[in-house]
Image (tube, rainbow, N blue to C red):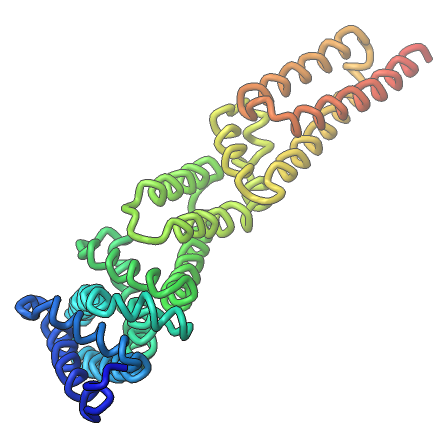
Length: 370
């Protein structure tokens, strides 16, 4: 250590006082702190670390930042009404810029003292302290989450809200770490969203036939895909998953078995467009194609049984065989046109039709010979 520094017991206090005042000014009014001499502040921080005052400098930084953040928290707690989220965003933006400026001033400490002592880097430290003192404040945490959710659902309902504000605040939560974003926003958001789509599904099932219901689901998925992207991409995927679960997977059997409009009605009426829509939606969810396969196979069994047990059909084996072939052509066309020649459905259909029709044909011919 330099002899002059070693002989001056007030060296740290003198230099720290200069730095602390500058840090406070930077945090309190970042835009008005540009008159500060970056070179001079950097030099003070440099020599403090060089002369082994790194620990005191780091500790003083934590104390000063914590004190400032508690002031921010108190100010936000006193902010009323709809201006809360705007004020929160303004405080965060100013703090974030100040943090970047401060990191540059302390870059020598960043390169030497912090790695050697395994301390948290300045910017990351600032994020951690913001999270602990502002986000997790008892008077702010729930209010922030509820206000953000309120803004998001107003936007989703078509109301005119500040989308940039929503984007900025959600990005802030993401910057603080995946767990913060998930706990403070994504998890409660997805819970409310799932309940909303569940209620919407129940409403549509009660008032719509299967065709209209599937069109509404299709529209919901399109709207979500086209919606302005202000959330984390992983959240957008989870939103789609929520729609698929609540509006397709859970009511699947009810849709298939809808009286006068369900799957069998579509098959009998050769409603290729509706069948294709059901196929494209059901394939998005677990066991969706399996349910279509089961319903299709069940219907074919019933259809062939009716044909085989019809005495008039059995009187003419040629006509009987032609009717079987006509039925096969019908379902071949459905699988090709509505189900994109899906291999899973195609294989199930071919296996069943080959086995089932041969068995019934053999029985019919025996009866005819008798």
